[in-house]
Structure formats: structure tokens, C-alpha cells
Image (cartoon, rainbow, N blue to C red; front, side, top):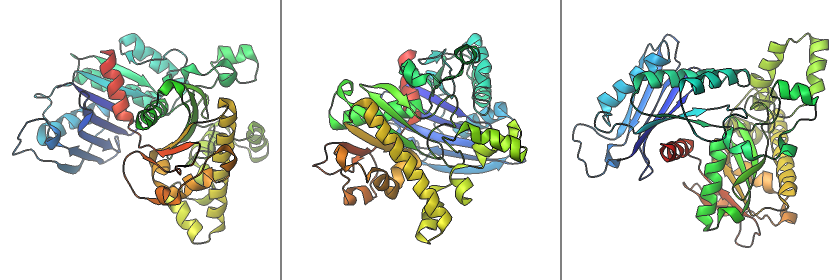
Length: 407
């Protein structure tokens, strides 16, 4: 059995999945949350029934929860191993062939899954200047994992890698060229593993050749981005140098006039750190309504709250603007897919964002869109010239696939 352990290490969390890549089946998944606080929450979900041809009378499917102090990522890794030993599947019996790591920022250096060495670790650390909230946490997980699994290969899969196919016209900012080059200021794009996975799934679901499709993928979660994908290659994406640019998000502003920040600095006395906190943690839906969760915003809309109504309208306005721009960049579109928490579950967001695109041949079927079904599904009418889909993303599986392919 070809098993890959996938690690997604955040600043205060460690998420993991054990995946049988040959059958594309998840055997176990879990998360250690609130690392470094007084008590950390541990959740371990095991699917022993997914093991082929094995009876495990003392190991059953289920979710196991606990709390205990976890001061750092090295201890978090030890806790993860203890969960596997206590609840299964036993890693001694099903050892991973490799460990795949999600790394948010690969800059322009990493354009494919990369086997991790000491030098690669150093470069990931250097790129922390471009993703100070993400890369240091990703690196902490890598260091802990290499200490725990020193005898298997480790692979970094970068969020930015899929977008390395952006043309210069798409990734270049119109600022002083020498300054931009010296400080690596350009559009990199993020959520790449999700955009790639969803676009490939859409082609497979439709029985179409990926190379012949013009696609737009909306990854709408607390973080949100949209990409234009031509023949399986990313040619435009909304996030930029950092994951801040683009769509309205849960706590992030998305696009804003840069001069607004200069104005706040001069008139309100905001420092660079103040502006950073404002744009990343006090903006987006939260800044407009006090709520970062779209479900709370929609509840506010239903209750007639003006702040929620405005926030929803701003959110949809931005989605439509990007959809229209990307249809123009692609010269038309064949498939539009919605994914991630909001994209997969908020039928009202999907319907509203597509409502004005009848001229482009997009027609949503209300009953299909409102249906509470799981899995990939079509929500456009049979007569719609553009196929609109809901495609559940699986970034862990995509990381496992790419890890296995490399090793």
C-alpha cells in the first residue's frame, strides 16, 4: 500500500492526513490546535474500514478528541504519532512512503513539487519575508517532521507553484522595474493546489480534455481567490505578492487603492504594522459587519441588517468584476467552478455572482444550485453554453498525488 502523510502546519496548528494514494483513500486525518497555549485541542479521525482486507476489532472508525499542553510543533508531532498509535492506523504497520508538506510561498524559485533538503529549508526560510504569517509556520512543521521521519523523503508542495505559468503581463506590477526586481515584487498567486485540483476534476467530470478547456475557478473560503486557467495552465489569478490582493475575504480587504493607506498613515497616524493588521485581520466581511463568516452575513441579510446587505453586495460586486475580466482575458469560458467553504455551500453566493452573465451564455438552474448534494455536480442548466460546477476541493489529496509522483 502506497501511503503518504500530508502535513499542513500553521502558526498555531498542525493538520495532517494519511492517504493511500494508489486508491486515493484517506485513512486518517487530524489536527492539533492552539499550539503554544495552555491547552491544545486534538482531534483525530480514523477510517479503519478503509484499510483493504483487514479486520481491526480493537481499532474502529471514529473521531477522538482530547486536550493537553502542546508547547511547540515538535511536541505536536509527537502527539500526532501518539494518536496514530492509540487509535490507528498504526504507522509501524502502514509506514508512509513519503511526507508531503504544504508551503504557502515559493516565490519565483519553486515551480514544482520539490524534495526537501537543508538548502530547500533555508530557501523557504528566506522567502518568509514574502509570507511572514505562513512560511515560518510551514517550516516549523517541516523541521519537526524531518526529525520524526528521518528515513523517508519529504516533499514541499507550494501554493504558488501552479501560478508560475502566469505570463509577464499578468504578474508584473507597474512600479519601478529595478526596485521590483531587487525586492521580488510581483504577483505570485496562491491556493494553487486547490485551483489545479479543481480544474483537473472539472475536466475529468465532463469527460473533456483539460488542454482544450478555458476555465475560471473560484476558491471561496475565509481566504478567497479566483483564477483563469487556459488548457490546464494558470494565466491569471487574483492574489498577488501576498494573499491579500483580490477578492473580498473573511478578514482581508482584497483590492484597495494604495493611496488609501497613505491617507490613513498621514491623517490617522497608522503605522506600517497598524495597516498590516487592519488589512489582514480587521477588513473584509469582518470589517464591514463584525462577522468574518459568510453564514453570519447571510443571516444578517435575512434579518434586514443594512451592514450585512451592503457587505454581501460588495462581495458579489467583486466576484462579478473578476469573472467578467477573466472571461475577457480568456476570450470566452467553457467551465466555471466554485469550491471551498463558501463556494461549495453558499448557493446564494453562486447564484448572485453569475446572475448578470446571461450575455456570456451562463444560465444557473435554481433547483440544481439549491440542492444539498455532496460531491462534484453541475448547477447550470442543460441549455447553458457555459458549464457551471460545484467541485469540492481536496488539497491534501493533491499534495499526496504530487508527493507520490515525485518520489
